[in-house]
Length: 363
Image 1 (cartoon, rainbow, N blue to C red):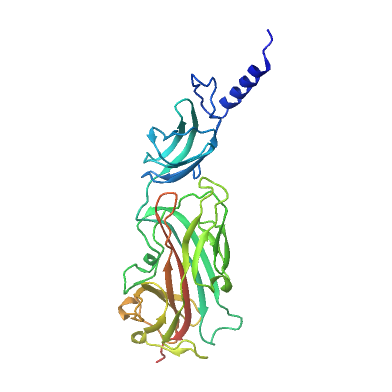
Image 2: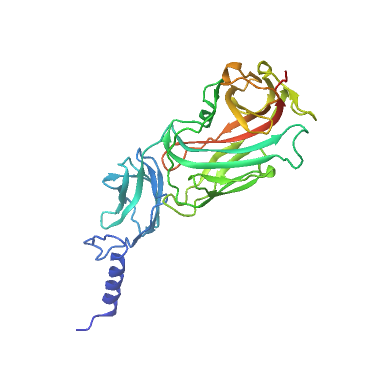
């Protein structure tokens, strides 16, 4: 039996469509016009719902309904090749995405991943830091330097200032990194772009991303944007205002920018500064012996009101004679981003430290 050409073409089109998704035939059309449903963008979001998702493919019918699992999404805009929807709330894990036009249905199996909602908690932690040396008493070849690290974490109520005790106008001996669990981004490299340049981050052995900033990249106050992630389960993620470079402060007292290092007693660590940005300033004092071996470090969170006295009670051991004091005072600005994967907040900070040295008294 010989088939007519038009019928054979229709059969081939239908067979091709069956490989693109689950198709139900409408009685009036003879074969579905919904031929394709691409992967949603983004393909992840909070289990609380509210993620704006773009679906491409076609040919979509006006009035089409969209489902994430068994829950219906709100359709924001429609065209024959694109639907923009708001994902409903759902259970953690992957769900099917289904477009139902009444006459035909297409399904993308397990195409959307729900993540636990992190509203009000930290979802990214890190610091982009620049250390500016004061004074002329450093060894020849010493220079200002930068460091940067960041990473996604499982949602937790935490701030970078918690490394320094977290309590305003208080100090801790031996600042320590708080306990966090990392979230897998699935990329070996990321890029942050800002007004003064860009920073290329490489995945380190501890799971955080690390970079070495140049002074030029931190010279302009402003925000840092995470460029779209190239691969991994959160592919395509981009974040505006992940971090900010703060305005610098000027340390007025003690006088650490002279040619020679001054001498300070425990009751003379009375800091005064001007400028800076944000509500808080970080202070760190490292005490070392004559050979620069660290003896003790005290970290403080100070209200940014221009002055702070480091209490003598913060030290766990008495000072010896002729020891070094390395004094760090840092303006801190926190990122302002709401992260798209789970509504958590960026706690990646920008820090501009001024660093000077003093000696403990002899005799």
